[in-house]
Structures are given as structure tokens and as C-alpha cells.
Image (cartoon, rainbow, N blue to C red; front, side, top):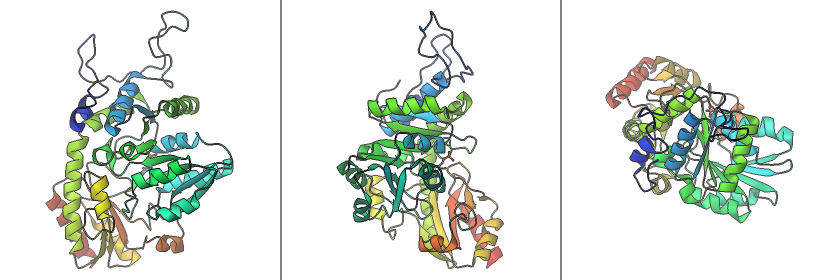
Length: 386
Ligand SMILES: *Cc1c(COP(=O)(O)O)cnc(C)c1O
């Protein structure tokens, strides 16, 4: 296990992992076991059954905890399974305040699964702290924060929101999927729980689905571990192995994601067929200063509004060749999508427009290909449509 005072890039490669004692094998093996030999009844060596604990998962959990600057990590079969586990902490009658532009799956599990279990949810503009305060109640147990948000890249002030939550004795959970711990570590700003879809940047290669929670509170971790084991939505050892492989290169990947996204954001911002670019790295972004303070880089996600109809925007995303038309994000390859027709199509048009999700809005996950090829691809798609 590496030292806490080592740099991020060093911990990304070493934290939670030691060469195998017996063979010297450098990489954590895929422990494909369901069960473990006990030395005597009830006397085991830390592992009894792989839903409860698996050595490949243990190494990943320690690695992620180190990267987020927390003491405890828990991994799950998906980001949604991780989010579900946070909700397992609550009881019927409890109230939750969340951002009004949270990930669609988060909105769905809140309103279509947990409202049925008598949890109550309010969705507010989390950039407006008065609005957040007004929504807090005696029964509020959780404030759910995402930053930057999807797809409009609003930036929320984690420290200020954690303070609001704590004033009401509520937990503050931050979904850190878009930023990654390389760029932003919510626990440093007072958040209680950090949540991840490992499917995105931490895995980094679009070849797995997994999730994680990190905290520095031992009691909280014990409760999360109880639900992790009781509900059983745990990741396979193979997927844990893949994420461990992904986190090793997180720093260099994120540097390139950020560099490419910044250059493309500036290029799009100056483009005739682009109405508006949403990227916190642009000085014109309303939350640019906050992002610069809270984050170590502005990330690889950007959105832009074409000067086009819904159909023209659909044609545009269909014409790209280096960018692949697909949902999801955070892999080494660039992806492009049209929220109104894809990720956010389930939101009624009027609600969508009111939230700023117009028909010609395009969201892109900027990969680590050569930026000139990405630029040329967007230009040829524009030439094909306009
Ligand atoms: C993808 C995503 C999730 C859900 O994660 P899965 O691994 O797909 O279950 C949650 N939050 C954000 C911000 C995401 O992008």
C-alpha cells in the first residue's frame, strides 16, 4: 500500500496493491472465487464469500479510497447500484434534496423507485443556495449534488452545499463521475460520501459497468458495507481488475481529455454555426471562477448548441466519423450525442426547453485522439449539414 502523502499519479498506480507474496506477480490477480477455505469453523483469513469480500475488489476499494482522499471505498455492480446503496441509508418519511439537473438514472431511481417507498424528493437549482436552504426540512437526511452537471456543465459549490446539508444534519453526497478524483475531491470540501460510475473515466475504456462509494466516516462505511453485502449488487472480480487497470492511467488520460476539450471548446465558441458552448474552461462560462477554484482542470465533457433545427442537429451527429454516435462518456474515444433525442428524450419537451436542453444541443465526450482529427471531423459534419 502506498503512502497517503505520495502524489496522486503515484497512488493511482500503487495504492491498494502489493506484488503477490508468493510469486512476485505485480498485478492484482482476478480472484475468481465464490468461497474461501476456513482454517477452523468461523476462522477465516479475511474472506468467507465473494459477495461479502473479494481480494481483487479489496484492492480496487483501497485504490479508489486513496484517490478520493478518503479512508473507505466500496464497489458496486454499477453506478446506479452505488446510488441505490446511499438511498438504502434512508427510511420511509425521509426527505432528499437534489439538483434539478442530476443524471437521468438518478432522477429515475429517486422518483420512480424510492417515492414508492415513501421517501420524498425535491429537485432544486443547486447553484442557488437560498433555494437549496428553502427546500431543506426537519426530515431532510440527504443533499444530492452533481458537479459539473449533465449536459449543461453547471458547476456547484461543494463546500457551500455541504455546509447547508450539515446545518440541517443531513448527509451531503456528491456524484463525482464527470470530474473524477484527479480533477476534484469532494471530501476535501466537506462532502460525506463520494459516488462514482466507474463505467466512465475511472474504467476509462468503455469496456465495463461498475460503481463506487468513498467516505472517511467509519460508521457510515460500516452501514454502506452492510447494504453492499445484504443487497448484493457487487462487481465481478474481472471488472474490478479492469478498473484497477484504468485508474493507473487516469492522470495522463484526464490531462489529455482536458487539453482536447479546452481547444475544441474555444474553436466551437468561435464557429459560425455554433450558438453557444457550455464548458467550464471558457472564461465566458458563468461558473468559470468557481470551477477554477474547486477543480484541478475543467474536464473532458462539453456541450454546444448548433444554429440548427432538431433534424439538422440529428443529421450532424449522424455525419461524424471519428466521434461515435453513442450515449455514455469518459472513454478514451470521443462520443457525441443529441440529448433531446437520446439521453434526455424521456423529459417532456416543455420541461426540457425550460431547463435549457434545446433541440439543437449537442453533448460530446472528448476523447484522447489527436485534437486536429476531432476538429476536422466536426468541421466535415458541419459542411455536410449546412
Ligand atoms: C453513468 C452515470 C451514472 C450511472 O452509472 P452506471 O454505471 O451507468 O450505472 C451516475 N451518475 C452519472 C453522473 C453518470 O454519468
